[in-house]
Image 1 (cartoon, rainbow, N blue to C red):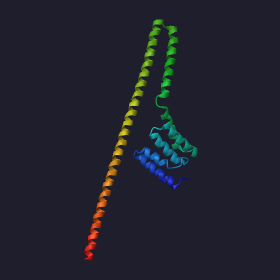
Image 2 (image 1 turned 90 degrees about the vertical axis):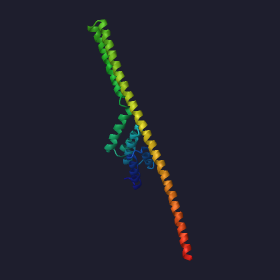
Image 3 (image 1 turned 180 degrees about the horizontal axis):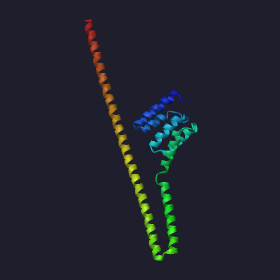
Image 4 (image 1 turned 45 degrees about the horizontal axis):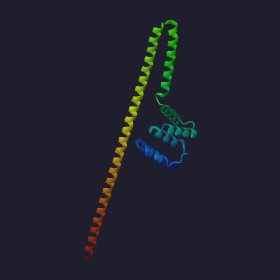
Length: 201
């Protein structure tokens, strides 16, 4: 059973994450003991996953499952971050290469059986060209993914800069309001003093 303080901290972390303040959300969750309930661990894992910290997110989801093995959101979150941590092209690249090498071997053995040496060499060149074509496609996909990641990083940096600028503007506005309040209080004090003087007269 979670305490009232843990529930309040989770609510504040969810509010920060909802507006994109992921770092602030994690800092809020750090106020809770690391051995807290599964709900807090799941929330921490989701935020870490959104930040791209897949290994940390996986650890948080495992902590949630250790506390409550039946939690489906923790199980689904763990599967998702583990899949993302492996990357979309890691295993696929190895499987493609294995298949192509197998096809190349079959083509070589078949060439000895029913083709002349010249025909076999031509077929071999075609297979090698196909392999190079697949490699080029995979490399292009990797480059596209890298460009997308760099674009996303640039957007995040711009948003963080805008947030810092808004924070500075808010601080400046608050300072101006405090100064105006001090002036009003000073004027009020002067008016009270004058009123007291006139009353004594």
